[in-house]
Image (cartoon, rainbow over all chains, first blue to last red; front, side, top):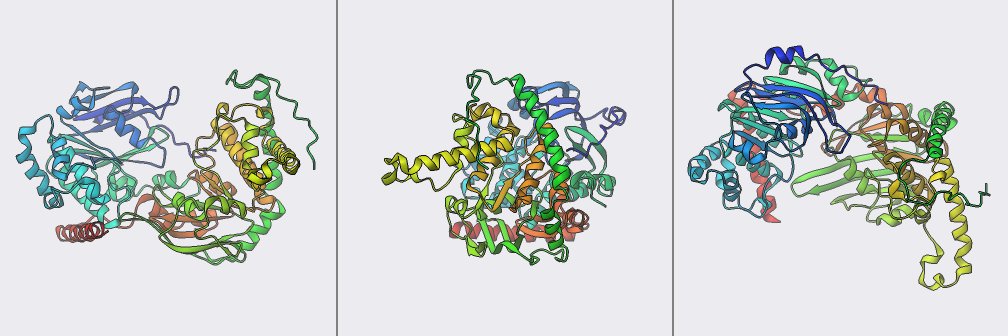
Length: 258
Length: 349
């Protein structure tokens, strides 16, 4: 029934451009169930200071790719490298210490803890830095400062997303991985998430974001990857991809006339 | 047509080997050929043509009135905390047609399904099925009234056999009542007719070879078939399918599609949620598109998929990234104001 089969993308472009990347993945194969691969050889690279988008239709493997980068899904073959060092399969605590932050899509706050405590959890490996980092994070997310003593469980979805992003920033990561940060939020709060993401990126943090709001995401990213069926289908600058009818076709099936 | 087979085909000890028996494999092949054949027949079946004809003059707008609606919903709202998951002002589903409900992740499709079938309660709104109100009617009564559903993740009872799962699907069983349970002669006849119907359906869905197997030993696709077959035990007039193709081995999809088309040919109305656009195009007479809880477009498949509102819904198009710092500030202020409002609402509760 899958009439929409895209050709896997040629790797030469990736190989030519990936040098000097802060984070790169090569030919990643990964999945959850034995014998079922969700990623069928994915490539990705992020240069220092870049904002990179991962988009694609439902079930394309976007979140799985992000999780594989962060060691949350077992990588069956291929490699993830951070500034040239192999980090494939490394535990989350080690990755955080090396400067990678990850914000899951759901259940991303400790509901029984206050906002300030949630942010402390993000810094448990370096508790002494709390005052300084708290200040930096609150500058980006003023709401978190105002409500610091409130339990995260009583927050709205938009506020929780800010807490989760704030917590990931506490360790001052060099690379931030965001899994559908705008999912389930109202249009206005989606605006805020995208603007904050851009601001975080402007402070020098490299960002990789998986998004369902493809158009908005392509507007703010430097480069994007379009996945289909666990493979790289298309890649390019945000503007190139946003104007590409093939991308729309991938989302809406063979009938879409862009 | 009475099923005359004495159900004597329990040839293999059940549950002994989950591996497919040689006979079963051959059987699946037969299923395809059959489904292919059905396809050719039913694609242009009289009821299909009638359904498409009836919908021909319906305007392609959200909430469009239908010539013969089986379901009519008004002002249905479901909120989860500050998030409005469903906010459908008006929706009509045409009787005897296959209607697809599509939309990006989180659009509220499954929530609307749960509401319509009594598996969830709305905050506001009402709807009717065949002209009678179904608001606040619990799920089991909805099924008894003739609207049944299946689930995205199948709910077969894995420690019961296939035939036992089927028998459970029947409603209004006399033996369920305490008073009559003791009097076997009152329900034995019904039990037999239920079993006959179950065997008939199992044959139609090519599951008769699996009759005595535990439902837990079936493949994902076979479970979908079993669930659909079980739903038909109640002789429904409307069938709601939640992602019927999810997790189904491609070899079985044609057969499943054939069965869904069959429902229409037998006069049932079908509403289904699906992500596979090719399937949507293949079998639907009408498509309803949801985004952010509301219906944003309606129409026949090809019209809907070329609709800019649908492209926006899938690719995300409600707001553009700000171009200037002033715009950015404006968007941030609007978001902060909304956060404050949300916060007050949460605290106020």
